[in-house]
Amino acid sequence: MSESFELPAPEHFTCGTVGAPGERVFYIQARQGRRLVTLKSEKEQVRALGEYLAELLDKLPAGTGVKLPEAGLLEPIEPAWPIASIGLGYDDDTRRIVIVATAVVEDEGEAAPTAKFAVTREQAAAFATRAQTLMKGGRAICPMCSQPKNPDGHVCPRSNGHVVH
Image (cartoon, rainbow, N blue to C red):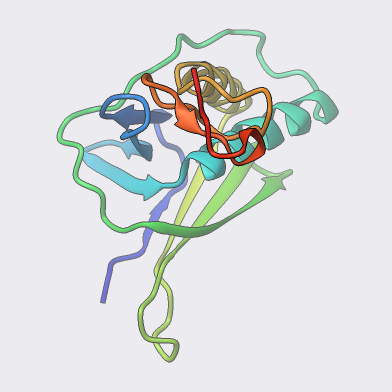
């Protein structure tokens, strides 16, 4: 069974990728003290989390106003498990955004491990910015079918099987 994690005040919270566009593997990562937690995620999970954090920050009272630099992944990049779902909340007492990731489980009877990160508004804003940057660094999107194109083009279903460059 995989391990669950709880980081109530991580110093580091980010997302990142390993690999070339079209072959990238996405990760969400947090560190508190000596505990480094890396989770494998899907591109759309990173995109959705970044967008939701940006929307949530617009609704919350202003933070300290300190802008954190975009932080990359820390080594070693060894994912504990892949993420199945992500939930968010806000803790009024600590004034932190709480992110809970749940692992993919093979056996339906098995309890899914979770990772809970309570991040500051500034960390959430830096994550949202980094997620947006990562999305722009991906493959170009076909204007006809909205699917990602490989560097040598792709067979577009809307072009009768012709390669679109």
